[in-house]
Length: 261
Image (cartoon, rainbow, N blue to C red):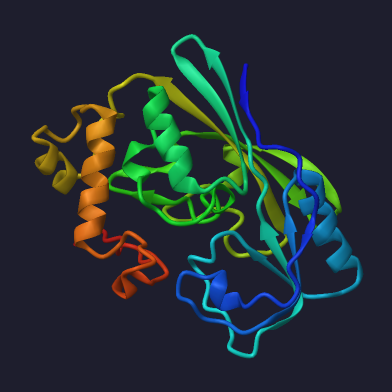
């Protein structure tokens, strides 16, 4: 097993922070009560304490799908800052467990650099890893449900931590069991990736064309990541603090599902 974890941190009181400093749209007033949770136990305890006190909870990763109110938030803001990546090789497969607070694009970067195939088309997506199973994040012919094997959750209703299989998450097109409820808090996500410097089969025509391959063929994962980042950049979909045109909630639309006439 290979483990990468940061140094031990203590809970940080962030009360009084402006939500505009925590969201990609730069909106939101002052958070009356806020805490930064930097371990799984701290995260669970912060949410559990707020629930016990009947305070409304606002969970924030990178705030990339959040329009915060100008009047601020009078409940409890919990910043998900739990970090850590663990990997175990199983033959040609790599099982990778990622804590909910890991920045997503850093996870994709690490996977490409390590030669773990399966996440490269998901480059440049804002947010943290814990958010990815919620709407089954996807782009350019790839989605996290393709590689997720399990999710660790905290059930706020029953006050217990559980490990769910991918099937239990009920993934669909930009959908999951998590999406329409705040009952479950994602603590970590486990992926099964392939040990390869090549990508998974390319499933998106525009991407395949830019790479000079046919749909269904593979390409060097590093090239796929670079091309995806370039495509997103040309569409204003890469966050850049210096470029106000990129201050957005990312890409949150869904394609229409049509049936033959």
